[in-house]
Structure formats: structure tokens, C-alpha cells
Amino acid sequence: MTGWDADSAFDLLGNELARKILVLTSEDALSAEELTRRCDVSQPTVYRRLDALESYDMVAEKIQYDADGNHYSAYECRLEELRFGVEDGGFTVDIQLRRTVAGDGESVSRRSATGGVGDVGDTDTR
Image (cartoon, rainbow, N blue to C red; front, side):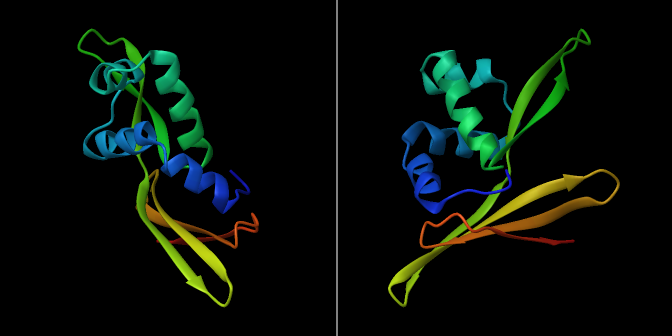
């Protein structure tokens, strides 16, 4: 996502199902079917939350293979840390994400916005 606003990120994180998906996928990459079962909600609802989380890069889709060699999509949490600060009549949001870069291992990306405006600064550190 090239830009986001802090208000919608807060709305997303205020959703109980979105938070549960983040927690579950932080332990292991899970399919939408498995998330549906564990969260006891409909699959379309899970996909809506996954789409929203993906739009903020908080989860990533990856291809997994079962024992028979069939492939399916699984989702893993990329959110590492979220910071919220209030100062000088405004607020700042800093979201730190994990990224796996082929051949380079993991890197960290930081996204931040001020006052809910949607101006984003990205910083990659490796």
C-alpha cells in the first residue's frame, strides 16, 4: 500500500476479528479455511478482514503445499509493533512490519502517519 490514513488503521485494529487473525497468524501461517474454523465466523467475513489487513501490509499471503502436493494460500502476520503517540495537539502512528526478502532473510519496514492525514514515510532497515 502506498498510502494510508491512521484513522482507518485504528478502525481496522479496533475490530476484534482482525486482531484475532493477527494473533493466530503470528504463530503459524494459516489458510482462510483454518481461520474460519478457529474464529467461528463465515469465510467471506474472514476474507474481508484478510483483504483489509493485507492492504496495510499487516498480513502477507504465501503459497503452501499439502502432503499431496496441492497448493493453497496461507496468511502470516507481518505486524511486529505499533506505536501511538500524542504531542503538540496531534498524534503520530508508527507501524513496524516484518518482511522476508528472498536471499536476504528478514527486514523491517516502518510506516508512519501524523494526525490521521495519510502522509506516509517508509523506511526499510536490513
